[in-house]
Image (cartoon, rainbow, N blue to C red; front, side):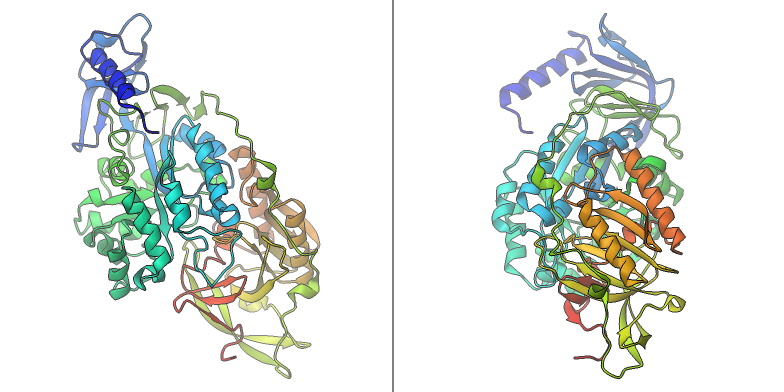
Length: 601
C-alpha cells in the first residue's frame, strides 16, 4: 500500500536512529549465517536489528541496539534466509481461501505471494477479484494480486461466468495491492494483434506494472517472437530446456514451476547448471499447490529443496525464489533480501539443501516456529452471492450423457483427450471405439472414459460430451469437479451414465467441489462452496477430504499423481493439444472446434 512522504520519512528516520544506536531495536537476531542474496555470499557471525516491520541494521554486532525491551533471538549459527516468494500461483487451486492458504504456508517460510485470481474472476468477474484483494490486504505476510487478463481465456471457445476487458483492467490498476497483469493466456490473441489483449497490456504498461506471460506452445518460431514483442515479461509454461533458454534470451524471466501436478524444474534447470545461463533471469514458482501438497510436503520450501536437488547452488536457488522475484515485480525496495530498509522477512534454518523453516519472521514479527503459526489471522466473511454459484437448469439424468453414434455404425474413429501425467498439456489422440445399441460407449480395455462438461454459471442446460484417455477407470465410476480451469464449469469423467449424473447432482447440492462416485455411492467429497472453488475450512481439513477423494480415485482404478488436478485442467482451452468447453471439443493448436468423430463434418 502506498504511503505518504511524511510516513516514509518517519519510518526511515526511526531506522536510522536504531542503526546509529540512538534508539533500541524491537527485535535482534544474533549470530546467524546471513544468506546475502544480493551479493551471492553466506556471511557468518551476522546480527540483524529490526525496528517495527523493517530491518535497521545487518552486520557483525547489533548488541548496541539491544535495550531493556528488545527481544533477542539466538540464531546459534543457523542460516538467515530471506522470506520465500511464490512468483506465480492461484490461491483457488489450493481449494482454500487466501487466509487459509497463508495459514498453511507461512510456517514453511513463505512470506510473499504473487497471486492471479483468474479462477474466481471467471466466475464473478471484477467483484470476485476485489474480494481477493481485500482479503489479501489483511494478511501478516505479503500477498500481491495480479489482475486477471483473460476472462474468458479464449473468447469464442468458451463461456465464463463473467468477463473482463481493458476497462476493468484499467480500474484495477489503480487499486492498492494490484501488482500487475495476470498471465496472458490468449497467446494467439497477442501474436495475431488482437485489439482487446493489447489494450489490456497497454493499460498495465501505462500503470508501470508487470505483464505476466503464458505461452503454452512448443513453437519457438515466429509466434513466440510475436508473443514476446507484444509485451509479456515472464513465462511459467516452459516444459523443456529449450523453452527456458528461449525465454531468457528474448528478455523474459523464465519461471520454473513445481506444483502438485507439474514438474518442470528438472527439465529446465540445466539451462543454468549445464549451459551456464545467468541465473538472475530465472524464477521459481508453484502454479499450483493442492491443499494436500501444502500440508504434507510444503510450498516454496518444497520447490527450493527440489531445485537444489537438481544441481543448483543453494544460494542461486534461494535467489530464484527471493531477490529475482522481487526485482522482477519491482518490489525489491521492500522484500526479497535481508538488508536495511526492507521488511524484516527472515527464515531461520539449519540446512539449505534440506531447507526446513525453523523460525519465520514476517514484517518484523516472529509469526511461526517449528511449523506452528504463532499469530492470529484476521477473519474474512464471504458474502452470500459468493457461496451460491452452481446453477443447473435441472437435476441431470443418465440420458443427458448418452453419446449417439452415426446411424448403422458398429465402430467409430474418435478424437480423444489424452492426459499426460505430471504435465498440463494433453495429447490429441485418435482411437477406434465400439458402438452398442447406437451409442458410443466407454472402453476400459483401452482406458477410454466419457468426459462431459456441464454449463453451471447461468443454468443454460448445455452438456458437451467427449472421450478421455489416461484415468484408468474400472467398474461403474464417475469423477466430477467444479474446479475446471479456466471457465470453471462442471466437468465429469466416468464409465457409466448414471454414475455421472449422480456425481453432477451431488456437486449441485453442495454448491461446488470435487466428488467420486462408485457403484451408486459417493465415496469421496470435498465441498467447495465459495465460487465452487474454495472451502472456508483450514487446509488440513481440506487436505484430509482431498485424500479421501484421491483414495476414491484409486478405488476406481486411477493411479495418476494428483488426478483431481489433472481432471481440473481438461477444459483449459489455452493449453494444447485437445480440450473440452461448453461449446464443444477444442483443438487448441488450431484454436478451433473439431467433432468427436474423426472425419465428421
